[in-house]
Image (cartoon, rainbow, N blue to C red; front, side, top):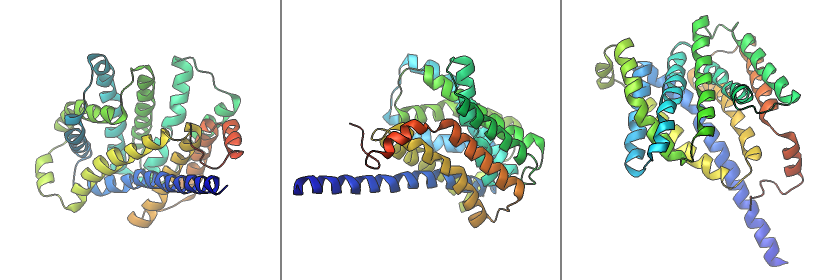
Length: 308
């Protein structure tokens, strides 16, 4: 009896520790939008993106190896994830606030579900379709917000979300690649793509880096180390311990925290378009991705029960 009680208490403490790790990861991702906004005060967005990739690649690539078969998939991922998703997100954040950017990019999840239905022939339930429609409605509402100064800014962020969604399709078809290996080599392969775009479209990059304040360097290193390497390492370690359906809903807290941190740290404004649009996007995404049947099953089990 005493041994069983001790084991149960130990499991509870481990579960509690993992719960706080989940909140830490979500907070790291949410604060990344604040770090990027700070970095954009001193550095051009494409150059900031490239420097992020340089730091990630320098840390991870020397300790990882890939095969020729994996390289075939990493090359298109360098464009869809490295350039389309990250570069366009950074450019979009140059012209809007941290919370709005995080909300729109959250649409990558329902867009990925639609692409999976069209390309991979995966079926969607009526509930999932309703969730996707709700999310898209939220973007229509957000389009009226003064935090989106022009239609092309919204398009940039939507293209960033599409880049994330397409990347998921490629990953599903690719051979198994360890998460940090993928992160490192994606960054390495994306450097020339983003660097060329920065060379063509931006100017005075090196001078801006040399004369950058702490904000520019913080934006580079936070986005590379804390948001990418640390957060994803923790996230994938948690996914190895718990069911995906139990962990993934917590990622929906990221845009919520991004809005809050944007208001508290950056002084971003709030308006009815932003509030209603955010609620629709997040609620719609939750409806689309959360498997209620599995959650009900987990509700009958001890909270955060480990997978065996």
